[in-house]
Image (cartoon, rainbow, N blue to C red; front, side, top):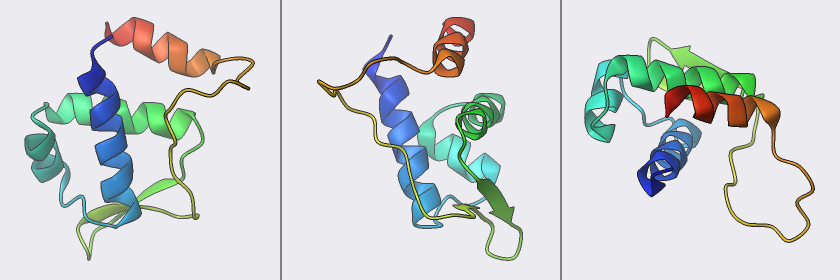
Length: 92
C-alpha cells in the first residue's frame, strides 16, 4: 500500500480538525485526487466512527466531536479494524 494513502488520510484529518478543508472540489484538488476518491475517504472515516459534518456557511468539513485519527505503529496493538482492512482491499 502506498504511503501517500496514509499521508492523504492524515492531511484530510488535519484539515477537518482545523476546519480548513474548503469545498469538496477544492479539497480534492488540493490532495490531487478525484472528488469521488475524496468521498470514499470520508465514507471510510465515518465508518470508523469519525463524526464528520459539513458547514455550508464556512464551506468546510468539521468534526462534531473533539478527536482525530492517529495512524502510527504501536507495540500494544492487538487487532486492526476489519472495516479499515476491507476498505483498503476494495480500493487497491
